[in-house]
Image 1 (cartoon, rainbow, N blue to C red):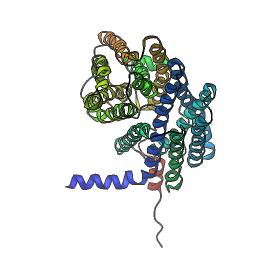
Image 2 (spheres, one colour):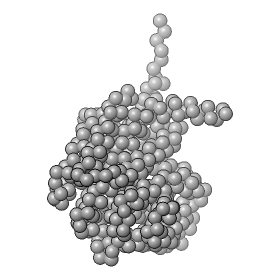
Image 3 (cartoon, helix red, strand yellow):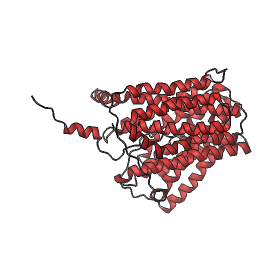
Image 4 (cartoon, one colour):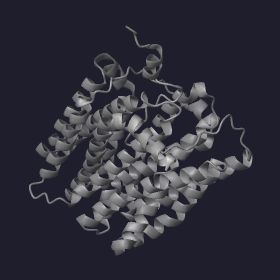
Amino acid sequence: MNKFNALTASLKNVIYPLTALFMGTMFVCCAYASLGSVLAFKLNQSHTPTTISGIILALYYLGSIIASFNAPKFINKVGHIRSFAVFASLLSVLVLGHAFSANRLVWVALRLGEGFCIGSTTMCLESWINTRANNKNRGMIISVYMVTSYLGASLGQLFLNIPDKSGTFLYMIISILFSLALMPVSLTTLPAPSIQTHKSMSYRKGYAVSPVGFICCITSGILVGTFYMLGAIYASNIGLDLKNVSMFMFFGVMGGLLAQFPLGKLSDTMDRRYVLTGIACFLVILAPVVHFMVLKGGYYLIISTMLLGAGTFTLYPISVSHVNDLIPDEERINASGMLILTQNIGLVSGPILVSGGMSLFGPFFFMAAFAIIPALFILFTIKKIKIKPDINYLNVTPTQPIPTAPANTFNELAQDDTLLDKAKDLITPVKE
């Protein structure tokens, strides 16, 4: 009972003040996840070649990468609340732009803009949330943030079930969700933080520190980007109706959400390279089976896609923890930036490469990619384990559930306490 009361008190003191930011996160994640699936479905309906669809959809991640370099300057100039308001409002406008034109070049520009705005709003939210975290509560805060992100993203997939005879109704709903995200964030009483632009560690150094962790980040990006951007196209092309397409996307994300904690906990008990290899082996065996199971619908679809999501969405957080086990504290921020950008390489290239394969070999290549890419990673990892069977850990970082793409994590990982917490310690009550 005492532990329960302590947990309740912690949630009240630490999580409750951040409720507005978590609500804003849920609205944003719900909207962007729904938008990706809706656009994929619309492109498929218009008989756009799968390769062209993959390129258009993948430009979202390119826009997000651009935001990681440019948005901090804007946020530092005008502040978090104003920046979030600008980018969320612009997202509402860009989404409605899809309803006014079906021109592919227009959609290219819209996807770049949407990726930039999502990356910028995510930076506002995550940097703000992380300034309220210290080493005593960071795990709990990031866990709640992760659950909020995945819950919003999974709920967004269900919007495909909404009837849309006009072809514009879903765009209107998504635009409304982005606008609704403004309300809790704009009304919060939390003081806005000041952030710094985090420079990335060089790729050469990142690879030298942990070849397996580095390559796994790219592998994760390819699989996650492929699932988000091409999942609806794949499910539609193999003959699933609109309801089952949305169920395929929904339960895939939910499987990733539910698997974070048990697999993360397992990776804290052994060499994480073995856990990553095990997950990859699981995907190699599972992927061909899933292709046939989803066609049966019902519980077969639900269970198989949840298992696929469990393998797909757990690679990145475990690989991030593996890299952090091997670096000193003063390099964590730079390593975080390097890992984010490394995963984004996969997020951009994955949909483009897999969509090309789907155009050549048919929709089955989508699921084949979830076997081929992990298989290549397994071969690479086994080779590296043979070369270096034992690892000299500098420290062991417990695996925290880290949101995957399209969110970008801008964490202040090296701080013991926030500036606000330190300021409170300096203030002494004035006695009259």
